[in-house]
Length: 254
Image 1: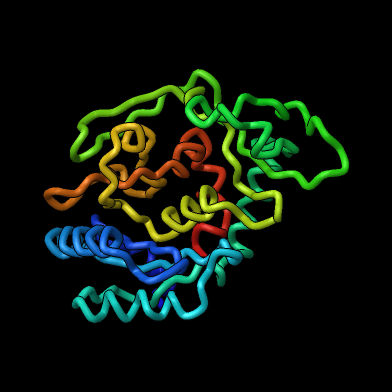
Image 2: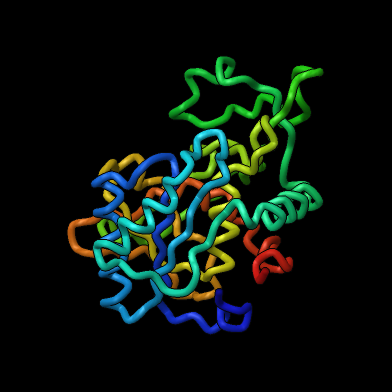
């Protein structure tokens, strides 16, 4: 595996493919992997593979190995060792504590049923001043900054922008205590200095919420191979105003 010093000497292009081992690799994911791989090689960059296996109840035993064999069978050879999120849980917990210490989180007792109808408008802020119900497990949400405009350049959609109130406060630790994808992926992409993501998802509403992950490179942007659409990275949105909180902690370099 790359050392911390090697991680810091990453090329200007660092792409990654990050499947979840909830089953075998399907055609859409394979297409995204091919596009990501070709774009990385075309730009003389690194292509990393990360197995996103934090959601243990959904992990299918053996599927991670089958996914890797499929990639290898199609000639999609990654750089360095495969990264398993399940082996980095302590790093994500440290990131969570860092955000909590900075006053950037709150506990939420809302159930999915209570939040039905808010899918398009985001979390309404019900528990921002404290859980509304006691004696129940709570999730941890990130306080999305109000009246904050996010903007980024997408290789297909061009210059995009939106206001953070459209997002709502997102969950970064679930009620079952599992660290949410929305936190783990941002921590990992910052650690890896990931610059480029690709996906086959064509929906404009998803693209509008896509953001490049935190990167030490000021030129970090979303690019992609012809015919693909940049990844809808909902998770990165909540880090925009607080990237330095995570950059200044050791978790980024572990």
